[in-house]
Amino acid sequence: MNYEYILVKEQVAPYIALIQLNRPKELNALNLQLMGEVREALKSLDDNDAVRVIIITGNERAFAAGADIKQMSDKNAIDMLKIDQFSTWDQIKKTKKPIIAAVSGFALGGGCELVMHCDCVVASETAQFGQPEIKIGVMPGAGGTQRLPRAVGKALAMEMVLTGDFISAERALAAGLINKIVPVEVLMEETIRMAKAMAKNSPIALQMAKESVLKSFENSLTEGLYFERKNFYMLFATEDQKEGMAAFVNKRKPDFKGR
Ligand code: HXC
Picture 1: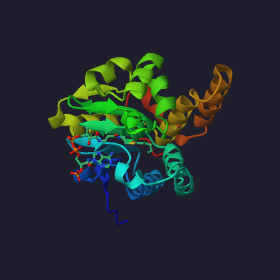
Picture 2: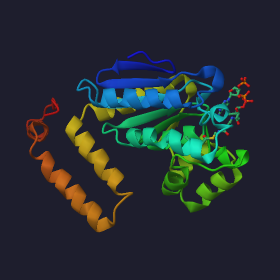
Picture 3: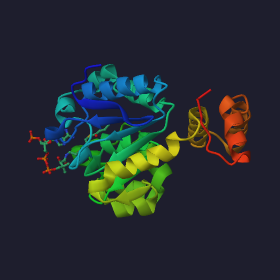
Picture 4: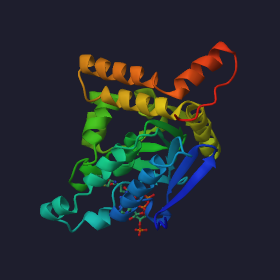
């Protein structure tokens, strides 16, 4: 596929793919085409058996400074309704494989929301997170008011959404929005290290486990436990379960085939 606003590497390391947002002059502002390209790339990597984990990154200055304000500025409510940009985000949400965000610089508005669509987040010391939509007369629209309180709790989510102020990587780590902070020079190396720790596991188990954790945000505890149990039982239908347990018993490394 030829993309204009993203760069895609299918094998940045064995079983690990990379999507890099690539509109550097606009701080990776997420215009409609860019988001459509992210959706297409995720779908194609999700369908590719040679990929087990996907990394999304930006550049040193910005992961993404939000939706493209210039593209939205003259739109009315009916335009926005017809454009229906959130169906793209709904597709992104359906990605089955684990996604890790590697964040340096600004992750604002839709940029912060894209980070929250990912499953884990490795950030550089320079990363800043924010939902500044309130400062331009609107509010988050790609899940910020729903995912942020689930990630950081009500108090900080309210503060971020109502003031529009950014938080540092340290505060984001303390609040539970991100997994770790690393020096900017080793951001990709450290993200790949985390991706490798996932990718060496059974891809079917990865998918079932991701799906089950995400269900915890949708269901009651009883329904969630029921869902988890079904996925747990289902994994006993895989060759990977036989391989993983045999490898443990025989004190060797497992070789998972995704079957
Ligand atoms: C369009 C943007 C942009 C954005 C930056 N740029 N953010 N263009 N949409 N969201 C452009 C600037 O216009 C400028 O282009 C260039 O990128 C560099 O930005 P500067 O502002 O000159 O850089 P700096 O002074 O360092 O300030 C960085 C910044 C600021 C603090 C990140 O750019 C900023 O506040 N950006 C907007 C952040 C924001 O409000 N995001 C939420 C958007 S709404 P030129 O051509 O002038 O050099 C949203 C809704 C989500 O995300 C829901 C739907 C998905």
